[in-house]
Length: 474
Image (cartoon, rainbow, N blue to C red; front, side):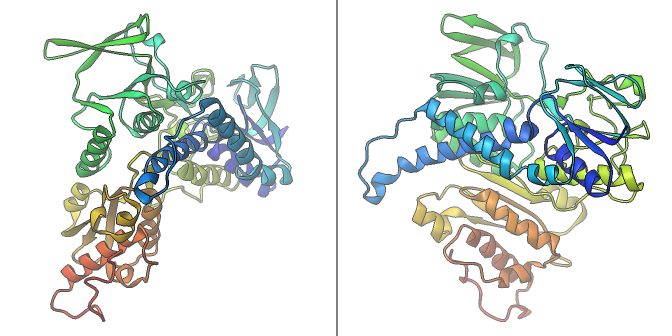
């Protein structure tokens, strides 16, 4: 008998298995595919590698402006895919806790196929393995949401897009969340003609409206055709050169043709084959596993973490949830995965990132000071010729706490991490304003926003020990 079986080897599952083993439990980690799960094999790791290639293509096109004479860059897609595979392998060996998992004595079953509950404590895989466990932790992740539309089977997912053998000449991307925006941005840089479709009024609807507007404008300037509020899809059909999407709005019917259509309209839990109902594990109306604050499901011996719960579907948050699930499964309810500071971002061109409250949410419960510093005002962005974007800081007028930070532009994701650390450490905006950040860096936009906010909040009070108005001309 095994004390704990963890199903799924993405960030949540790997952390859960490691934590269980460290606590002394006999632990088995099984996964339908390879070690690392979607994050390591089909998500952030390969996606970021492709995004880096896209960045190199863009930067190569800037060389002439700096006096470097080269021919136009030409992408060898098979070679790029080889590099992606190499990165995935190296990440699996060194950056996904595999060494620690093996050292802790976890039994790992890879490529076992989908698992299911045979009974409350018996797990069975499609390759015929069975394991009896006292506690079960479900970390099986999610799958792309499918739409009930005629011809939908002709479309591709983001996974299909990453595994192409050549850059398609043209691409329809339906859905403009983080995944869709990244697909559009990457393949546009690779030379494909890209059309991005968003049914709502703006792309990146979970970001600040001005972030959405900035990214949409940058996409259009780069050649992406952005359709916002396009209506409803009626059908997909095969054409001689690829695929046609028919859609309509207010009685007007239109269509768009391309070599490939990628649909990225959401994510749902990968639970269809688990037999959850048979063991009393409930799901919510969206199909995600219900868990309490301790990651425990409605079946007391079963816990869940990561995308399968529908909560903060990001790798760092999955790691926290996996740790909490294993701890609570073995020691009783004591640890939660909740954290007030959750930075998120995406490696599009331009990048965008956020941490903390939106301006609208902040205004619901606070009197706020909002400062925005444009990248076209900052030295490093001017040096690099990357002046698109801005940093927006939201500060509580009463206690000067940093409530939110929203950034769009080059290195936005990295800069947001500084804001996250400042917020997690309880720094007031004056503390951040006094922090001597290196010059010239993209972080200077954040420092300059903090200085501007501090001056607004302390005007006439002499709270800053120096005239910092121009200290972050960065």
